[in-house]
View 1 (cartoon, rainbow, N blue to C red):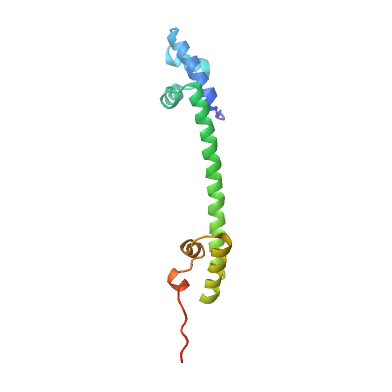
View 2: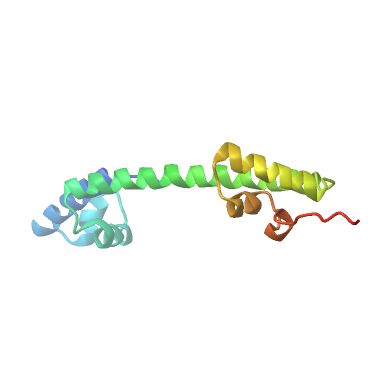
Length: 136
């Protein structure tokens, strides 16, 4: 049987109904059967959401949705980062001078520090700061 996903608002309402039934004389098991949930689910919900008001539950649900969106963005950015790192690994035939030039361009266009640009492009900072010395 497929599980039903209750919203936090629905959970709050079910908890209020269950508490009313228990106060009216039903046992926890009877109240849960009437609401079509298990006793373990009731106790879990009561522990997690029982102390919250309806306003707090609404705020909690908004924050939950925001967290889900942020997690999705982090996954996408992590994938983008992995793609860029793989592209840099494949183009490993660049000379140190070419890599220095790329880091400088990134610094100028994106207005980031040398440390940040070097870390993103896997360029050691000592190589970035190296000044070639011509022999006489």
